Amino acid sequence: MEIINIEARTFEAMMTGFETFAEKVDALCRANGEKTMQEWLDNQEVCKILNIMPRTLQTYRDNGTIPYTRIGNKMYYRSDDLKRLIPHIADRQKQKKLNNSKID
Image 1 (cartoon, helix red, strand yellow):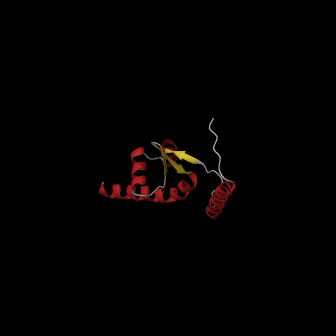
Image 2 (tube, helix red, strand yellow; image 1 turned 45 degrees about the vertical axis):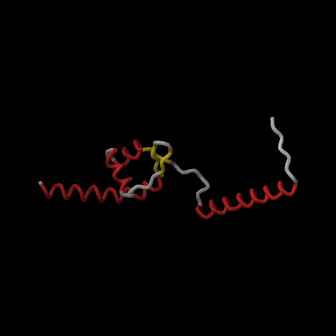
Image 3 (cartoon, one colour; image 1 turned 60 degrees about the horizontal axis):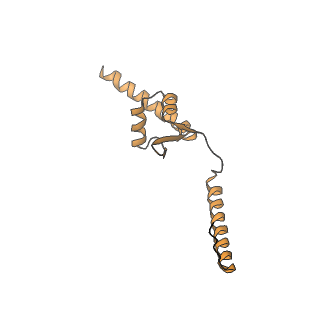
């Protein structure tokens, strides 16, 4: 085990810096209201909920329709974002069906 000695005023300066940092993090959390974990869904769950194919979900990600978070090689979606987008996506699907029926 290695022991490192530092001066008291250096230690106090470090502690002050840590406290300032912690206060800033708390202030950011309060400002965003995100101190609690929200439910996150993966690709498979989102495709099932929206009744879409994985390629359609990728298109929604690519064009910015669905916000997501990438952790490693896996995508996750907040359930709150999905709830807001369901009516919008349903309208797109209805419009697509109408356009396809006009072509027939």
